[in-house]
Image 1 (tube, rainbow, N blue to C red):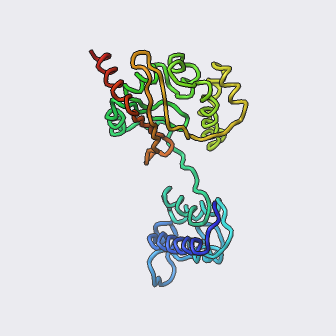
Image 2: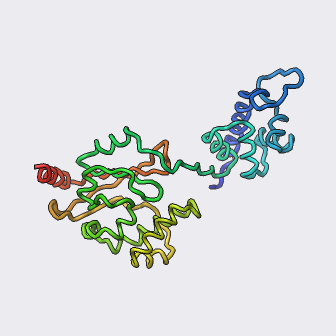
Image 3: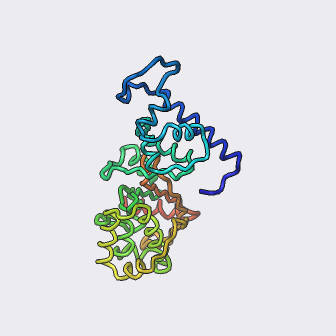
Length: 279
């Protein structure tokens, strides 16, 4: 994490102190399965009770709650999170207050795309809209995305289509020059969850189908999702140019919603294409 000023560090420690005290105060001994002992002047658990539940020293936990400059580990923070019955959001908040990067939350593999999200994607028509998961699987896309980017009913993964869908490749400007940056961005995404079998599946499937991908993957280049302009040459509509905006879905941070806004002249061509297709 970047170096903090003394004022920022003190503010974070104050927040940590108040946060831990508030989480401790909302629990009772009965909530965590321990017997209450002695007269209790304040509500909630005592510091020593949290320390026992987390299997850490009372003095160490006291210093943590006081915001002292002590070393903390992931295992200890997780133990405290369990002792205080923290939610995933609260656990991530605890990590940040102690100066550690929050853990990645494991997302359910088979979560369905909500009706509201599908309505938003369809409502973006006549502009293209695509919903991808962290593996670049195509979760949802509107008719215009299929029409102008060359996707067909067999396309299931954006990266696989990039290398194996001939219509997609023929429509995209400078395909060969952009391929290295596309693969580099996928490698960066895969590195965030090492050993994930779904990333391995995509890589294996594409490696078997595309020597070009194998060549690019062997370079070990790493990049980001910096490209903000997408240009295609449609066989009926001609040149189409879009500004791309990628949004993270709030309750599914492993999903990316890509909205394509047409540049001047492109929207008129899109409308003409819709008329030609629908009659």
